Amino acid sequence: MINIEQIHHVAYRCNDAKETVEFYRDKLNMDFLVAIAEDKVPSTKAPDPYMHLFLDAGNGNILAFFELPNSPKMDRDRNTPEWVQHIAFRVKDTAALLEAKRELEEKGVEVLGITKHGIIESIYFFDPNGHRLELTCVTGTPAQFKELKKVAPAMLEEWSVTKRAPKHAAWLHEEEFEGSDS
Image: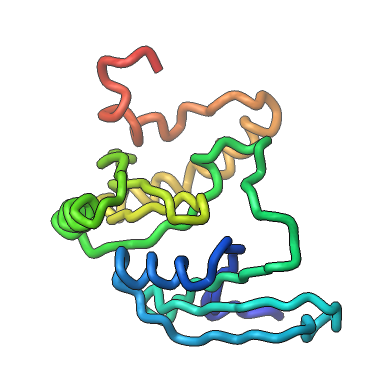
């Protein structure tokens, strides 16, 4: 039986290895751990030079990037809204989130939020490669998470039939949508 212990790393593509390391080091205070470069891909043996970077995202989590100079310029999936694909990093609490927002803005990063999601609060911004990033803190109670887990199967089943948002957990964004038409 497969027993996953944790995510070792998540890898994304970047336009410029050095610029990417500098962004995550200077803006998000991540340590640059490892660089691996080869002229051939070890798994496929394809002749495709690359630089593979690893950054410490805290608590054993690693964020990795590939720069691929011989491939067409990277771009995001234009059929997917830019808010969908993102990397979310957890901070300790709301105070830490507010401090992170202040620090990022002082470092010249344009930040969206704080957005209240009922059980978490988040801010959003982009890295130099166009990857959307989220910093989030957990604000939900154990009872709220228990209720969300309980209604998840019914929500999924309703969605699979109707393709309309089930309302079992609509309370999550009540505060965010108060006074709006959404």
